[in-house]
Length: 182
Image (cartoon, one colour):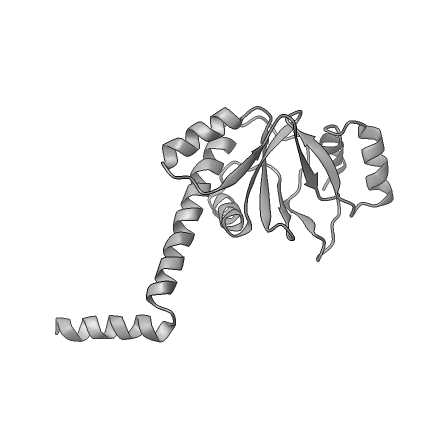
């Protein structure tokens, strides 16, 4: 994380100077920050969250900071504050039955990783803030649609695993179908 990223993130704290001082003493240390002032966070199940993150990165879609809480098995996507209505609206356009998530806006808190978490720390950055993220309305749209796509993809993978518990079962069905066609 850059110095500008630390300044932006710590500005959300009740006492930004104290937050920066604590991070200067222990850059690995997570901090609990209020959401709704500078940013909101969409918290998603880790499995779906990692797939969503991968889809967003591979497609070079708008993306803000992203963190992971290994113990809670959740991924947090940072959005601009007060974007809940926008996110929910686009999520409803993508599906009638969205996967479970938590939107942390006004009157909520999130524990964020320190500026330099180490491998094995509970809280880590998948994409650390490097500066104040620009207000890109497409981030909420991209997150909503890729979140639904990731959940659908993983549901299909799970279904496939139930139907074909091992590679031999899938291969046998393909070979049998090919034999029947001849």
